[in-house]
Amino acid sequence: MKILLAEDDMKMAAYLLAGLTESGHNVDHVTDGRQALSYCLYHDCDLAILDRMMPEMDGLSVLKALRASKKHLPVLFLTAMGQVDERVEGLAAGGDDYLTKPFHFSELLARIDAIMRRGQAGTETRVLRVHDLELDLMARTATRQGQLIELHAKEFAILEALMRNKGRVVTRTMLLERVWNFNFEPNTTVVETHMSRLRGKIDKPFDTALIHTIRNSGYSIHGPR
Image (spheres, rainbow, N blue to C red):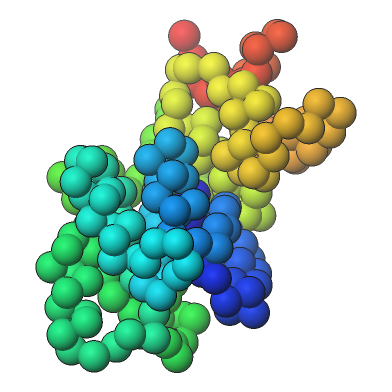
C-alpha cells in the first residue's frame, strides 16, 4: 500500500516510517500541510496519515481542501489533539479515522487495515486472482493451486502491482516508483533481482508461467491464452 505521512516531528516521523515500511507499506513523508495537500492532489497513494498541528497549513484544513476538490482519498488523523470536540471535528470534516498520541503501533496498523477494508467493500474484492494464483490483500498471503507461497514484503508489493494490472504491461519505472519510491534510478537492477526471485516462487514450481517479460517494456501477468 502507498501511504503519505504528513508529520513535522522528525523523531515521530522516523518511528512511523520504519514501522510502516517494515509492515510492507511504501511511505512518502512530508513535513508541512501545503506539501501534504499538493502531494495528495497530484500523486497516487492509497491513504494519507495527517497530523493536525503542522506548519504552513494544519491537517484539518488539508482535509477540507481535499474534500472540496472531490478527492476521496482515505485520511487518518494521527495527532495529540484528542479532545472529544476535536475528534468530532476531524471526523465531521471527512476524516476516515482519528487516533490520538500516544498510541500503540499495532492499533495504528489495525486502523489502517480497517479503513482499507471499508474502502474496498462493494468496490473490489480483498482477493486478487490470476488463473490459479490468489493474493489476499488483507491477510497478505499468496496461494497457488492451494499451496501457500511465502513472499517477502517487496515481492508481495510487486505481485500486487502486477495482479492489479492483470493482462496489462507494468513497466520497470512503474515498479520502481510504486514499490521502492524511486523516481529515477536508471542503473539499478533491483527490479530484475526481485522479479527473478518472485518468478522462482510463483512460476518455477508449477507447469504454467504467469509472469511474462514484455521486451523493452516491462512485465505482465496473465493466465494461459
